[in-house]
Image 1 (cartoon, rainbow, N blue to C red):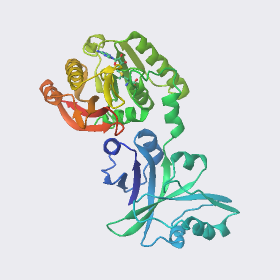
Image 2: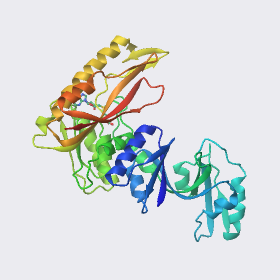
Image 3: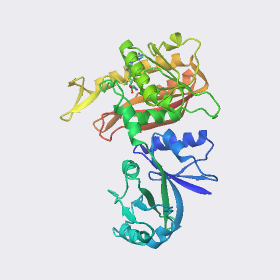
Image 4: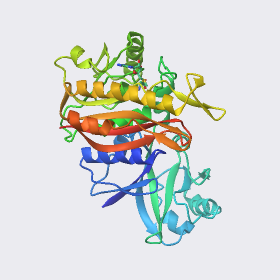
Length: 393
Ligand SMILES: C[S@@+](CC[C@H](N)C(=O)[O-])C[C@H]1O[C@@H](n2cnc3c(N)ncnc32)[C@H](O)[C@@H]1O
């Protein structure tokens, strides 16, 4: 039996939900969790590169190589598979709050390895852990040291894959069109939402619609991970930009087989434009209302002073829009199809203002809430994204 460690990103609950869904899709079991580490046991070797490139919320994957009661250089070297190389670069990263490791450990491990190579070098991690960029760029063999406080042993795990930071960043900042004012999802969050929409059986068709597609972030992440995608937005200008972004994606990421369709449509009547089309999922970040901001401690909306009444009014309007849309989508969604959707939550004066009563209304429309909400947003953000997963019954 092999055990793998998945290092989860900052929005831990969301990252874990994504990992759980992906493992379930591939029939790879269920993770157990400790802090930001998820442990997955498997009778055979996992395709870590494939899983890593699919997951938006996993930073790196490591395979446990051994357990040792005391961290000594000798016991660490015993579990390092250094292979046949002339030069060797390694790093030891600590993924436990306590106890701390001795700074001299890297040097002691180096001393033990030196006779085997013409050159041995180590990279000292910043704040105990090594970034994915450093692991990739400096070709570091990274070993994670994780203290198991129950068994009082150290686990030694070798990093076997890391997130392709360049690829994520290229899709985020390299695309021809962006619209930060309307709000754009970070690609990793879009990918996690797409993965939350995975069908139950690996053989099922994966087709998704984003009816508030904006610049096409969700469509892009769906395309890259093998979904058929359909997008729509009420603005023709926006749809044209999404099309150019997807054309760019297809050429830059060599997505020859991808088939995407785009429409100009109001999300509350999109079924008319798509008549005859059925999708297995709707994945979307809708219009979240005119943004609220704090300026010098005061709440503003569109640069003007705002009050709790403005918050309530905005949320009331959004609730109407979302309900109208969810009602229409029942005509497009396949049976057991999923809706993965962002709803805003406004945080002001230590209070949270969610979109009220929407879950109950969704149940009346024939949806069941199956997961969430998962929160995505900076701790001090006024508007946080809450991600809900519904199933059409
Ligand atoms: C928050 S943005 C979506 C951003 C998108 N997730 C991205 O990353 O680019 C919301 C989008 O909804 C569109 N929109 C607003 N009201 C709409 C409606 N009633 N029907 C369809 N689209 C609408 C806006 O034009 C905007 O592009």
